[in-house]
Image 1 (tube, rainbow, N blue to C red):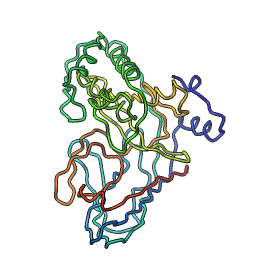
Image 2 (image 1 turned 120 degrees about the horizontal axis):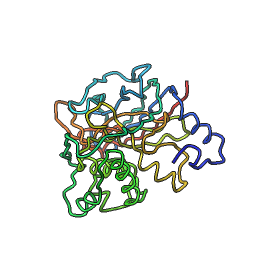
Image 3 (image 1 turned 45 degrees about the horizontal axis):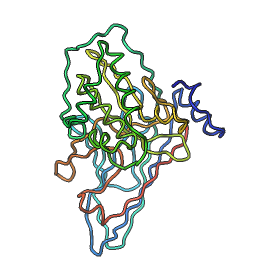
Image 4 (image 1 turned 135 degrees about the vertical axis):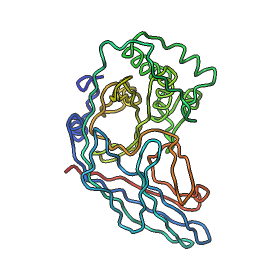
Length: 313
């Protein structure tokens, strides 16, 4: 779906935000955090914050800074996503408010497909990550319905098959697995992306989830899409299957489809089942997108609220 065929809502703000996403943008970003100890005793914990990434379409203008001291920076060993860990202690009933600030430049990604890439290809990428397993009968049957002699056709088949199979809804803060997406059928952008990545991997293509937040809107929601690598190259093609599905149903004015994503998003991580080190412990998280409290057993003791504010520079 092109810019001109996608829905144009009556709001001038929506129209101009959509138009701007076709061009490079720069944002000043503020994450506001509020944590409160709702238990009856002192709690010590780590607060983990994903950080904006440097990518071909995204450049950090001013590095992240925090209004409280103590942040230690890490990078995961598999996907090289960066994150910060802040050790905190809160007495019973105590709360703390602080923020993260940074400036970032974003650019739209427009990808063209190779004209003569035939299948099968020499590279194989089995889905070994838990959220991308494709072992149950229904998923295997779905994979077997895909067949093409060209890379271009196969990628388009995967994109269209996921749109045809799933319904958008039931948003969660974490990540649906490919099996969950196919079982539930009604899932959010993460579920669309997990299923598409799992199918691409099962067909021998290298693919990964990309996650972050929309930027430049009154309400900047989290979002996930995916990238598929053109075999034997270093080029990745973006697929925003969920957004394309919503645009076709006239449920969004944002731009994102097979081969194109706009500059109205800030990338915080790539990949899923991300290995982290927190307080000397090795931990795996489904997706590195939202801030969280660790140990996980304290998440019902420490309430967390956060919001993302952006301003164009």
